[in-house]
Image (cartoon, rainbow over all chains, first blue to last red; front, side, top):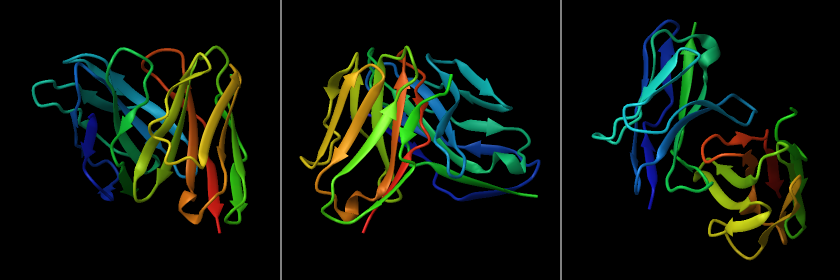
Length: 113
Length: 112
C-alpha cells in the first residue's frame, strides 16, 4: 500500500536558518504530493503541492520538488522565522479518484529567536 | 467562505457513552473525509464520502464507529459505546477535486 516517510522531530533551528524536512514515499502509479502545516490548536492547512514529476510547489517561501527518480518531496525554506514553528505533514494521493490522503507522521519544527 | 465547520470543538465524555461529531463541508465540495489524529498513530483516514455515498470505510476501527452523510452539507461520525482509547482529535475535510483537501479545526475527544 501507499506510505509516506518523513524525518521525525522535533527539529529545532535558529531564526533565519535554512530548513530541510525530508519526505520519501511509496505509491502505486503517479501520486500527487502535498505538504500540510498544522499550527498549534488548529487544523491542517495545505502549504504546497505538486501533481507530476519535476513539478515544484511553492508557497510562503517554502518549496518542494517532486522527484520521481528518488521518490522524494523534500520541503525547504531559505530563512525560517519564529512564526514557521508548527508541525509539517508530507502526504500523497494516488489513483485517479477523490481518495483520502496518506500522511507521514509529521515533523515538529521549532524555531528559536 | 466559512471553511469546513466542525462541532463540538471539545468533547469530554465517560466510557460507554455515545459521542456524535458533526461536520459541515465547504459548499460545493462533493467529497468529505473523516480523519483521526493521535500521538501514537498520527493521522489516519477513517472513511470518506463522494457525492454523499460512502466510498471506503476500511479505516473505521470497529463496529462501534459509524458515519453518515444524509446530504451534501452535513456529516456525522458516531462512536457508541465510546472507550478511553478513542480519545483523539477527529478532523473532517472536504474537497471538490482530486487534490486539495480543506480541513476543519478538529474535535478534541476525551473519553474518561
